[in-house]
Amino acid sequence: METKSLELPDGLELEGGARLAPITVAYETDGRLAPDRRNAILICHALSGDAHAAGLRAPDDRCAGWCDDFIGPGRAFDTERWFVICSNVLGGSKGTTGPSAIDSQTGRPYGLPFPVVTLRDMVAAQRRLVAHLGIDRLLAVAGGSMGGMQALRWAVDHPDAVASCLAIATAGRQSPPTIAFHEIGRQAVQADPAWRKGDYYAGPAPDAGLAVARMVGHITYLSEEAMQAKFGRRLQDKAEFGYDLGTDFEVESHLRHQGDAFTRRFDANSYLYITKAIDYFDLGREERSLAAALGRARAAFLLVSFSSDWLYPTAHSRELLRALLLNGQDASFCEIDSAAGHDAFLLEHERMAPVIRGFLERVHGRWTGGGDGGEGDSLAQRRRGAEGEGS
Image (cartoon, rainbow, N blue to C red; front, side, top):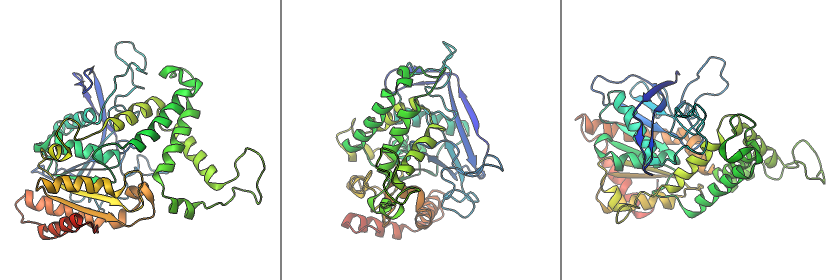
Protein backbone atom coordinates (compact mmCIF):
# COMPACT_ATOMS: atom_id res chain seq x y z
CA MET A 1 0.00 0.00 0.00
CA GLU A 2 1.24 3.46 -0.89
CA THR A 3 0.92 6.29 1.62
CA LYS A 4 -0.29 9.51 -0.02
CA SER A 5 -0.47 13.04 1.33
CA LEU A 6 -3.09 15.77 1.13
CA GLU A 7 -1.88 19.31 1.67
CA LEU A 8 -4.25 21.80 3.30
CA PRO A 9 -2.51 25.18 2.93
CA ASP A 10 -5.30 27.03 4.75
CA GLY A 11 -5.30 24.54 7.60
CA LEU A 12 -8.04 24.35 10.21
CA GLU A 13 -9.58 26.47 12.93
CA LEU A 14 -9.20 24.18 15.93
CA GLU A 15 -11.78 23.54 18.62
CA GLY A 16 -9.51 25.17 21.20
CA GLY A 17 -9.48 28.44 19.23
CA ALA A 18 -6.04 28.25 17.59
CA ARG A 19 -5.49 28.06 13.86
CA LEU A 20 -3.14 25.40 12.51
CA ALA A 21 -1.81 25.91 8.99
CA PRO A 22 -0.60 24.44 6.78
CA ILE A 23 -1.63 20.85 7.45
CA THR A 24 -0.53 17.62 5.78
CA VAL A 25 -2.81 14.57 6.03
CA ALA A 26 -1.25 11.15 5.33
CA TYR A 27 -3.66 8.53 4.03
CA GLU A 28 -3.96 5.22 2.22
CA THR A 29 -6.80 3.66 0.23
CA ASP A 30 -7.66 0.10 -0.76
CA GLY A 31 -10.26 -1.16 -3.25
CA ARG A 32 -11.98 0.83 -5.98
CA LEU A 33 -14.42 3.68 -5.60
CA ALA A 34 -17.71 2.80 -7.30
CA PRO A 35 -19.05 5.05 -10.06
CA ASP A 36 -21.90 6.18 -7.76
CA ARG A 37 -19.35 6.78 -4.96
CA ARG A 38 -21.56 4.94 -2.46
CA ASN A 39 -19.10 2.26 -1.35
CA ALA A 40 -16.55 4.35 0.59
CA ILE A 41 -15.66 3.37 4.15
CA LEU A 42 -13.40 5.37 6.45
CA ILE A 43 -11.48 3.33 9.02
CA CYS A 44 -10.32 5.38 12.04
CA HIS A 45 -7.30 4.15 13.97
CA ALA A 46 -6.71 3.88 17.70
CA LEU A 47 -3.96 5.56 19.74
CA SER A 48 -0.95 3.73 18.31
CA GLY A 49 -2.22 3.24 14.74
CA ASP A 50 -1.61 5.20 11.56
CA ALA A 51 -2.73 5.43 7.93
CA HIS A 52 -1.24 2.03 7.05
CA ALA A 53 -4.25 -0.12 7.90
CA ALA A 54 -3.76 -3.09 5.57
CA GLY A 55 -1.28 -4.81 3.32
CA LEU A 56 2.49 -4.50 3.07
CA ARG A 57 4.29 -1.31 2.11
CA ALA A 58 7.13 -3.36 0.60
CA PRO A 59 7.65 -7.08 -0.17
CA ASP A 60 10.23 -7.39 2.61
CA ASP A 61 8.00 -5.85 5.30
CA ARG A 62 7.65 -8.09 8.34
CA CYS A 63 4.30 -6.72 9.47
CA ALA A 64 1.16 -5.85 7.55
CA GLY A 65 -1.06 -2.90 8.44
CA TRP A 66 -2.60 -2.69 11.90
CA CYS A 67 -6.09 -3.66 10.58
CA ASP A 68 -4.96 -6.17 7.97
CA ASP A 69 -7.06 -9.04 9.36
CA PHE A 70 -10.21 -7.00 8.71
CA ILE A 71 -9.43 -5.33 5.35
CA GLY A 72 -9.03 -7.16 2.06
CA PRO A 73 -10.84 -9.44 -0.40
CA GLY A 74 -13.47 -11.50 1.42
CA ARG A 75 -12.69 -9.98 4.81
CA ALA A 76 -14.96 -7.94 7.06
CA PHE A 77 -14.24 -4.81 5.03
CA ASP A 78 -14.23 -6.55 1.67
CA THR A 79 -12.11 -4.52 -0.75
CA GLU A 80 -13.75 -6.27 -3.69
CA ARG A 81 -16.94 -4.43 -2.65
CA TRP A 82 -15.85 -1.44 -0.62
CA PHE A 83 -13.39 1.44 -1.08
CA VAL A 84 -11.51 1.70 2.22
CA ILE A 85 -9.78 4.88 3.42
CA CYS A 86 -7.54 5.33 6.46
CA SER A 87 -5.63 8.45 7.48
CA ASN A 88 -3.16 9.24 10.23
CA VAL A 89 -4.80 11.49 12.83
CA LEU A 90 -3.98 15.15 13.34
CA GLY A 91 -1.30 15.33 16.03
CA GLY A 92 0.24 12.04 14.93
CA SER A 93 3.78 11.28 13.86
CA LYS A 94 3.27 9.14 10.76
CA GLY A 95 2.88 11.74 8.04
CA THR A 96 0.02 13.90 9.33
CA THR A 97 0.93 17.21 10.92
CA GLY A 98 1.78 16.85 14.59
CA PRO A 99 4.29 18.14 17.14
CA SER A 100 7.21 16.49 15.31
CA ALA A 101 6.34 18.24 12.03
CA ILE A 102 8.26 21.29 10.87
CA ASP A 103 6.69 24.61 11.83
CA SER A 104 6.77 26.76 8.68
CA GLN A 105 7.28 29.86 10.82
CA THR A 106 10.44 28.65 12.57
CA GLY A 107 11.82 25.93 10.32
CA ARG A 108 12.05 23.65 13.38
CA PRO A 109 9.81 20.89 14.77
CA TYR A 110 6.80 22.34 16.60
CA GLY A 111 7.32 20.59 19.94
CA LEU A 112 5.08 22.07 22.63
CA PRO A 113 4.11 25.19 20.62
CA PHE A 114 1.96 22.77 18.60
CA PRO A 115 -1.65 23.57 19.55
CA VAL A 116 -3.76 21.10 21.52
CA VAL A 117 -6.06 19.16 19.21
CA THR A 118 -9.26 17.25 19.88
CA LEU A 119 -11.03 14.31 18.25
CA ARG A 120 -13.33 16.86 16.61
CA ASP A 121 -10.27 18.46 15.00
CA MET A 122 -9.05 15.05 13.83
CA VAL A 123 -12.44 14.38 12.26
CA ALA A 124 -12.47 17.83 10.63
CA ALA A 125 -9.18 16.98 8.89
CA GLN A 126 -10.60 13.63 7.79
CA ARG A 127 -13.67 15.42 6.43
CA ARG A 128 -11.42 17.56 4.23
CA LEU A 129 -9.68 14.40 2.99
CA VAL A 130 -12.96 12.67 2.13
CA ALA A 131 -14.11 15.77 0.21
CA HIS A 132 -10.77 15.83 -1.63
CA LEU A 133 -11.45 12.25 -2.76
CA GLY A 134 -14.74 13.40 -4.26
CA ILE A 135 -16.96 11.65 -1.72
CA ASP A 136 -19.99 13.50 -0.37
CA ARG A 137 -21.28 10.72 1.86
CA LEU A 138 -19.52 7.71 3.35
CA LEU A 139 -21.18 4.31 3.48
CA ALA A 140 -19.58 3.86 6.89
CA VAL A 141 -17.14 5.26 9.40
CA ALA A 142 -15.67 2.53 11.57
CA GLY A 143 -13.14 2.24 14.36
CA GLY A 144 -12.23 0.62 17.64
CA SER A 145 -11.22 2.32 20.88
CA MET A 146 -10.19 5.89 19.97
CA GLY A 147 -11.21 5.02 16.42
CA GLY A 148 -14.72 4.30 17.65
CA MET A 149 -14.82 7.70 19.31
CA GLN A 150 -13.90 9.32 16.01
CA ALA A 151 -16.66 7.33 14.28
CA LEU A 152 -19.19 8.63 16.82
CA ARG A 153 -17.88 12.17 16.38
CA TRP A 154 -18.31 11.81 12.62
CA ALA A 155 -21.93 10.68 12.96
CA VAL A 156 -22.81 13.61 15.24
CA ASP A 157 -20.75 16.40 13.64
CA HIS A 158 -21.37 15.46 9.99
CA PRO A 159 -24.76 13.72 9.95
CA ASP A 160 -25.34 14.18 6.22
CA ALA A 161 -21.95 12.69 5.37
CA VAL A 162 -22.30 9.33 7.15
CA ALA A 163 -24.72 6.50 6.29
CA SER A 164 -23.53 4.26 9.13
CA CYS A 165 -21.28 4.25 12.18
CA LEU A 166 -19.44 1.20 13.52
CA ALA A 167 -18.30 2.01 17.07
CA ILE A 168 -16.28 -0.89 18.46
CA ALA A 169 -14.88 -1.31 22.00
CA THR A 170 -15.43 2.34 22.79
CA ALA A 171 -17.53 4.81 24.77
CA GLY A 172 -19.43 8.05 24.44
CA ARG A 173 -17.06 9.75 26.87
CA GLN A 174 -13.69 9.04 28.39
CA SER A 175 -14.04 7.65 31.92
CA PRO A 176 -12.05 8.75 35.00
CA PRO A 177 -10.02 5.48 35.19
CA THR A 178 -8.92 5.75 31.58
CA ILE A 179 -8.02 9.42 32.04
CA ALA A 180 -5.97 8.36 35.07
CA PHE A 181 -4.00 5.74 33.11
CA HIS A 182 -3.26 8.31 30.41
CA GLU A 183 -2.05 10.82 32.98
CA ILE A 184 0.38 8.26 34.41
CA GLY A 185 1.76 7.78 30.92
CA ARG A 186 2.06 11.51 30.29
CA GLN A 187 3.82 12.05 33.60
CA ALA A 188 6.27 9.25 32.76
CA VAL A 189 7.17 10.97 29.49
CA GLN A 190 7.51 14.41 31.07
CA ALA A 191 9.63 13.05 33.94
CA ASP A 192 12.24 11.73 31.48
CA PRO A 193 15.20 14.19 31.54
CA ALA A 194 15.52 13.80 27.76
CA TRP A 195 12.02 15.23 27.21
CA ARG A 196 13.35 18.80 27.65
CA LYS A 197 9.83 20.27 27.73
CA GLY A 198 9.13 18.78 24.32
CA ASP A 199 12.24 20.21 22.63
CA TYR A 200 14.20 16.99 22.14
CA TYR A 201 14.25 16.56 18.36
CA ALA A 202 17.89 17.56 17.96
CA GLY A 203 19.06 15.07 20.58
CA PRO A 204 18.07 11.90 22.44
CA ALA A 205 14.34 11.24 22.66
CA PRO A 206 12.61 10.53 26.00
CA ASP A 207 12.46 6.83 25.21
CA ALA A 208 12.59 5.64 28.83
CA GLY A 209 9.51 7.66 29.77
CA LEU A 210 7.60 6.73 26.62
CA ALA A 211 8.40 3.05 27.17
CA VAL A 212 6.92 3.19 30.68
CA ALA A 213 3.84 4.94 29.30
CA ARG A 214 3.40 2.15 26.76
CA MET A 215 3.90 -0.53 29.41
CA VAL A 216 1.14 0.97 31.55
CA GLY A 217 -1.15 1.29 28.55
CA HIS A 218 -0.46 -2.25 27.35
CA ILE A 219 -1.64 -3.68 30.68
CA THR A 220 -5.02 -2.01 30.17
CA TYR A 221 -5.41 -3.72 26.78
CA LEU A 222 -5.25 -7.23 28.27
CA SER A 223 -7.61 -9.12 30.55
CA GLU A 224 -6.51 -11.03 33.65
CA GLU A 225 -7.49 -14.25 31.89
CA ALA A 226 -5.39 -13.36 28.85
CA MET A 227 -2.37 -12.47 30.97
CA GLN A 228 -2.70 -15.67 32.99
CA ALA A 229 -2.90 -17.80 29.85
CA LYS A 230 -0.08 -15.99 28.06
CA PHE A 231 2.37 -15.53 30.94
CA GLY A 232 1.15 -16.93 34.25
CA ARG A 233 4.01 -16.77 36.72
CA ARG A 234 6.46 -18.35 34.31
CA LEU A 235 10.08 -17.25 34.62
CA GLN A 236 12.00 -15.71 31.73
CA ASP A 237 15.05 -17.76 30.65
CA LYS A 238 15.75 -19.08 34.16
CA ALA A 239 14.69 -21.88 36.46
CA GLU A 240 14.76 -19.96 39.76
CA PHE A 241 14.32 -16.39 40.97
CA GLY A 242 17.37 -14.20 40.46
CA TYR A 243 17.00 -12.55 43.87
CA ASP A 244 17.94 -9.21 42.31
CA LEU A 245 16.12 -6.35 40.62
CA GLY A 246 16.50 -7.79 37.13
CA THR A 247 13.83 -9.42 34.96
CA ASP A 248 12.46 -12.62 36.47
CA PHE A 249 9.01 -13.13 34.94
CA GLU A 250 7.91 -13.53 31.34
CA VAL A 251 5.33 -10.80 31.80
CA GLU A 252 8.07 -8.35 32.80
CA SER A 253 10.08 -9.20 29.71
CA HIS A 254 7.01 -8.83 27.50
CA LEU A 255 6.20 -5.39 28.87
CA ARG A 256 9.76 -4.20 28.40
CA HIS A 257 9.70 -5.45 24.82
CA GLN A 258 6.41 -3.63 24.16
CA GLY A 259 7.78 -0.42 25.61
CA ASP A 260 11.02 -0.58 23.65
CA ALA A 261 9.26 -1.40 20.36
CA PHE A 262 6.84 1.50 20.82
CA THR A 263 9.66 4.04 21.17
CA ARG A 264 10.98 3.04 17.74
CA ARG A 265 7.74 3.91 15.96
CA PHE A 266 5.99 6.65 17.94
CA ASP A 267 6.79 10.22 18.91
CA ALA A 268 6.62 11.03 22.61
CA ASN A 269 4.99 14.41 22.09
CA SER A 270 2.35 12.81 19.85
CA TYR A 271 1.59 10.46 22.73
CA LEU A 272 0.95 13.46 24.99
CA TYR A 273 -1.28 15.24 22.49
CA ILE A 274 -3.31 12.24 21.34
CA THR A 275 -4.00 10.91 24.83
CA LYS A 276 -5.12 14.39 25.87
CA ALA A 277 -7.47 14.52 22.87
CA ILE A 278 -8.99 11.19 23.94
CA ASP A 279 -9.41 12.43 27.51
CA TYR A 280 -11.27 15.52 26.32
CA PHE A 281 -13.79 13.36 24.46
CA ASP A 282 -17.31 13.65 25.87
CA LEU A 283 -19.97 13.41 23.17
CA GLY A 284 -22.74 14.86 25.31
CA ARG A 285 -20.79 17.71 26.92
CA GLU A 286 -22.30 20.43 24.74
CA GLU A 287 -25.82 18.97 24.79
CA ARG A 288 -28.38 18.25 27.48
CA SER A 289 -27.40 14.58 27.42
CA LEU A 290 -25.70 11.84 25.41
CA ALA A 291 -29.07 11.08 23.79
CA ALA A 292 -29.45 14.71 22.72
CA ALA A 293 -26.01 14.65 21.09
CA LEU A 294 -26.61 11.36 19.31
CA GLY A 295 -30.02 12.61 18.21
CA ARG A 296 -28.26 14.83 15.66
CA ALA A 297 -26.97 11.74 13.83
CA ARG A 298 -28.76 10.21 10.85
CA ALA A 299 -26.57 7.14 10.57
CA ALA A 300 -27.38 3.54 11.36
CA PHE A 301 -25.23 2.35 14.27
CA LEU A 302 -23.47 -0.90 15.00
CA LEU A 303 -22.05 -1.12 18.53
CA VAL A 304 -19.69 -3.96 19.41
CA SER A 305 -18.21 -4.73 22.82
CA PHE A 306 -16.19 -7.57 24.34
CA SER A 307 -16.96 -9.41 27.55
CA SER A 308 -13.47 -9.13 29.10
CA ASP A 309 -12.71 -5.54 28.05
CA TRP A 310 -12.31 -3.57 31.26
CA LEU A 311 -10.89 -0.46 29.59
CA TYR A 312 -14.11 0.19 27.64
CA PRO A 313 -16.48 -2.39 29.12
CA THR A 314 -19.82 -3.45 27.67
CA ALA A 315 -21.62 -1.04 30.00
CA HIS A 316 -20.23 1.85 27.91
CA SER A 317 -21.67 0.40 24.70
CA ARG A 318 -25.00 -0.22 26.42
CA GLU A 319 -25.08 3.42 27.50
CA LEU A 320 -24.74 4.40 23.83
CA LEU A 321 -27.39 1.85 22.87
CA ARG A 322 -29.88 3.15 25.43
CA ALA A 323 -29.38 6.72 24.22
CA LEU A 324 -29.93 5.70 20.59
CA LEU A 325 -33.01 3.63 21.41
CA LEU A 326 -34.42 6.50 23.43
CA ASN A 327 -34.26 8.55 20.23
CA GLY A 328 -35.76 5.74 18.15
CA GLN A 329 -32.59 5.55 16.06
CA ASP A 330 -31.36 2.57 14.05
CA ALA A 331 -28.99 0.81 16.44
CA SER A 332 -27.66 -2.76 16.49
CA PHE A 333 -25.62 -4.15 19.35
CA CYS A 334 -23.37 -7.19 19.73
CA GLU A 335 -21.31 -8.28 22.72
CA ILE A 336 -18.69 -10.86 21.80
CA ASP A 337 -17.58 -13.32 24.47
CA SER A 338 -13.79 -13.08 24.41
CA ALA A 339 -10.96 -13.52 26.88
CA ALA A 340 -8.65 -11.15 24.98
CA GLY A 341 -9.59 -7.95 26.85
CA HIS A 342 -9.57 -4.63 25.01
CA ASP A 343 -7.22 -6.06 22.38
CA ALA A 344 -10.13 -8.21 21.21
CA PHE A 345 -11.18 -5.44 18.83
CA LEU A 346 -8.04 -6.22 16.82
CA LEU A 347 -7.93 -9.98 17.43
CA GLU A 348 -11.48 -11.30 17.11
CA HIS A 349 -11.69 -10.70 13.36
CA GLU A 350 -13.24 -14.07 12.49
CA ARG A 351 -16.12 -13.59 14.91
CA MET A 352 -16.64 -9.96 14.02
CA ALA A 353 -16.53 -10.44 10.25
CA PRO A 354 -20.08 -11.81 9.73
CA VAL A 355 -21.53 -9.12 11.99
CA ILE A 356 -19.75 -6.33 10.10
CA ARG A 357 -20.45 -7.80 6.65
CA GLY A 358 -24.16 -8.20 7.37
CA PHE A 359 -24.47 -4.70 8.75
CA LEU A 360 -22.68 -3.09 5.79
CA GLU A 361 -24.77 -5.01 3.27
CA ARG A 362 -27.97 -3.90 5.00
CA VAL A 363 -26.96 -0.25 5.07
CA HIS A 364 -25.73 -0.32 1.48
CA GLY A 365 -28.92 -2.04 0.33
CA ARG A 366 -31.14 0.56 1.98
CA TRP A 367 -29.05 3.46 0.69
CA THR A 368 -28.99 2.24 -2.90
CA GLY A 369 -32.64 1.17 -2.91
CA GLY A 370 -31.97 -2.54 -2.76
CA GLY A 371 -34.46 -3.35 0.00
CA ASP A 372 -34.15 -3.50 3.76
CA GLY A 373 -31.11 -5.77 3.55
CA GLY A 374 -31.86 -7.52 6.82
CA GLU A 375 -33.80 -4.94 8.80
CA GLY A 376 -35.60 -7.73 10.61
CA ASP A 377 -32.31 -9.06 11.96
CA SER A 378 -31.32 -5.56 13.02
CA LEU A 379 -34.55 -5.11 14.96
CA ALA A 380 -33.98 -8.42 16.68
CA GLN A 381 -30.49 -7.35 17.65
CA ARG A 382 -31.80 -4.08 19.03
CA ARG A 383 -34.38 -5.90 21.13
CA ARG A 384 -31.77 -8.26 22.55
CA GLY A 385 -29.52 -5.31 23.35
CA ALA A 386 -32.32 -3.43 25.06
CA GLU A 387 -33.22 -6.49 27.12
CA GLY A 388 -29.60 -6.91 28.25
CA GLU A 389 -28.87 -10.25 26.56
CA GLY A 390 -26.10 -9.24 24.13
CA SER A 391 -25.30 -11.54 21.22
